[in-house]
Length: 531
Image (cartoon, rainbow, N blue to C red; front, side, top):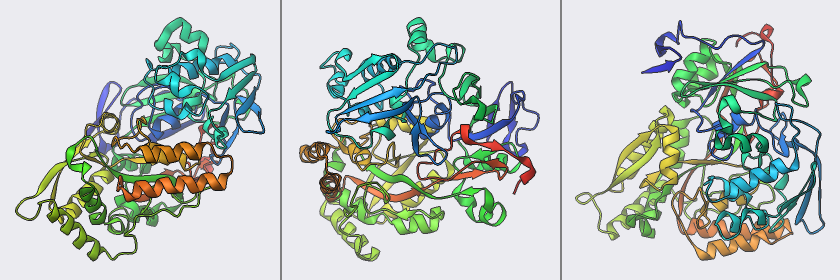
């Protein structure tokens, strides 16, 4: 396999020897990223690799601290009304990178655009918590009806549909980032091209070479620029994690996500200090397409759940410490009892397999009449290995999977367009609340890949939203999760861990459950050594 670099093509085995690199601009950090970004416009990004990059450039009302925790960002403080329905954010005095002040109107403009149905922003539903946002997003109300107002340039008042204790954390998600109203009015959607781009975060966009890298440079007008110690950061789009590890070992990369699971034994023996593995607020799962007839039969969904060997996948195939999943919401979610589970969790696997085979025979399948459909995965080597393992598991219940492996960006598009039979996505929390997972199964939600729809399920989530008591709210959401599990909507696979390798000379990298390590907090000290 080869990869393209600017003006030259270099074989991976020689680690791009002789390829052009961007010129040195002071202290430089080279970050290996999962894939190329779709856009520099926050309205259109979806993957965590895109949020890692753009979060160095744009800043919401809140932002991530050194441990991924929400801290003051564009706002210095906020007030919450006693009923939890009105939040008032007080913006700090700061400017866009072209010197124009950042105002509350920039946020209002960005949110209205995000929710405008013509924009078709995939994460717009995360703003439905704002008053009238759902009706704006579905075209029932004009964007001017959105429940936000600027009482002055530095005060943003947000009115909510229901209490949202997680709102401060949601405000550091890309769906809530501002865009520069003045440049958008000048260039339209072309505001997000590098030559027109202005930012309010610690970095500026210098270059974007598609399928290669995005180069960012320090923003001298950032309000805390004096404490930003990396001058240049290159985000390299590397879809092959094995190739990325070779670059990391050669010193071409200072950090990389993900690493190849198959090399975990070597990494533990040879570069243990570089491994950054901690529990992650993420769930990997198999999803079935309810728009296709076979998956409307609950017996098939139950059989696939029963035959899927989570312990073998995590313990023998992946081997990096992930936990087998028997529910949707991962451990560690705030204000959530976490008691929902698939009903067969305690059943030995042999008995599960026998029941799955019996269910398939009830549907008319067996050794002489097998069921076949496609299985969508990404081209990442670890995804291919997991797919092959799943193929073997389901073969035991008379299902023949045809693997459809595509690169990460295409995978996401096909999932959203419901262009699959069985898929293997994952979900990483946008904010630490069970609703962020359970909303994935809400009717019409943008990331409801399987197009599941249940009025009873939707009603439970709506009931939970109106609760101000976190204990009551958590119990109602738990009932919704159990309802989805009883309907075998997903095949929960495993609860994720972070998969970063970081050179020991990169200082300030603190592994955390959100896996956000903004370049703003990092520095380089090569006197530390490379191992």
